[in-house]
Image (cartoon, rainbow, N blue to C red; front, side, top):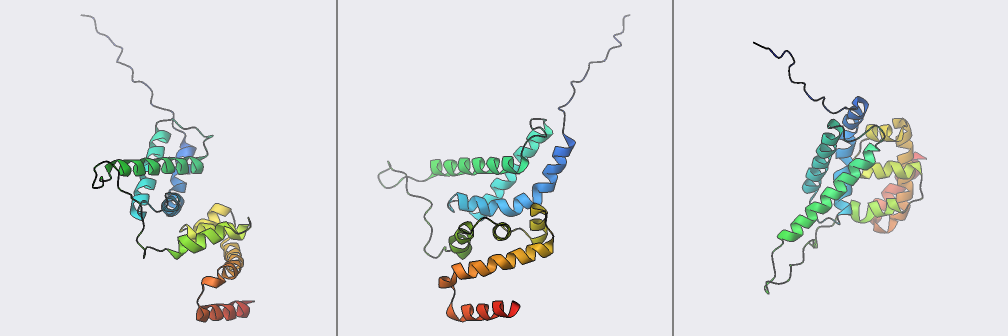
Length: 202
């Protein structure tokens, strides 16, 4: 009786970049804190905030699967790759919604979608964020941009590579400029109170 001593060889699994996996883990909290709000703005608020959270989470999982399957190498710009994945998935989601939209009375034309109710006004997205985007490029601008995306002082400190005390000073500088630019939208009573507070802090 002849015995085949050679057991079937298992194919080696994909080569996983351990450092890339760690980088992916490290950026999860920051990505999920910022991306849903950014997505909602990029998609012109046609997706709810909850939908944007779901999209961002699914995009993260898809990228994670690519990392674990060895499809992404150490050269990948992980933050940019995650953002691109979430934008593409959000666009696919909107297209799917458009295909499911009800027809109008004629049965021929897709009903208009994405209109906002008149009371669906978000001062942060409608006034503050565009004003921040119009500020000169600077670190104070970056600080308030990241804060408007929902990042904490600790997260902002990590992203920019500065101490939290520097974050506080840069935010204060940016807020003074924002108050000046948004002065026309601030109620008189609050503007006077704010001005006095700023003068006292100097």
